[in-house]
Length: 294
Ligand code: GLY
Ligand code: GLY
Image 1 (cartoon, rainbow, N blue to C red):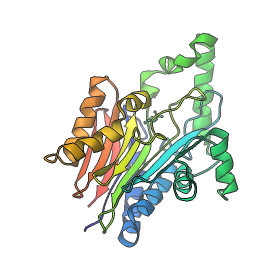
Image 2: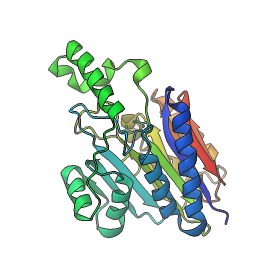
Image 3: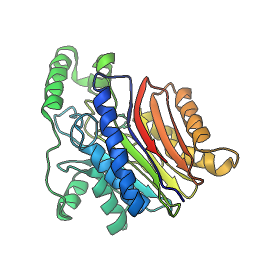
Image 4: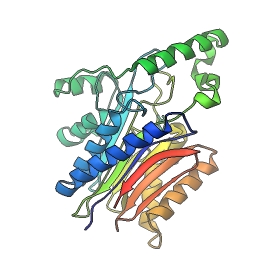
């Protein structure tokens, strides 16, 4: 079977960084594809996402948005078509959350580790300490904090997003789905969460069945409004669509997923690969940095 890979750098309402994001997404896709020619799907997904996490233009790993308290907490998940899965939620002080998620999958009996436990697990497993904050993201945080302080009462803290100006609200989760030459599929997603995320708020990217899902019918990675992706169980729904509608393919399933998002007036994007190796994608945002090789 011919290997295939699709990568996204997040659905967004458009940003000045679009060409840089696109460049890093194409690069990660190419590196993932090189790996796929030699190794299996899960290896390619991890490597592609590590490259996306290393980009300062994308909201995952290095360059993640700071949360309300000025810290970066990240979520990531990875899943294979045999239903093995691993994820971390609210992890800090690492460069590559996706690799920690893979370690959870491969060397523990758990699926998700969260918060301090996730960070301690990573460091005890030998993942180096790394502060993913970049100067532009720290500056942005300070700017928003200033504005927020002037306009907000303590009670409004959970609605911080309402204080962010439309134009500044860009999303940038990253993800990858790959099929290797043996026809095996894997999918993964990684994010820094929402800009000014309230500490403790959990989005879709670290949740198996929401941001990421993979079974023998297909693999999916989602991006966008995490709360809505969660309540839709969007990743699982898209794979179920492939499972129960023999006549559909990955593109049809992605379109169905976008219709589900539309029904909740939620912004987002989806990438997927079905069991025949068809590639599908869709988004209802102005832009979604994305690239695939088949
Ligand atoms: N940071 C939210 C998203 O792009 O999915
Ligand atoms: N889609 C990423 C998040 O909502 O955190």
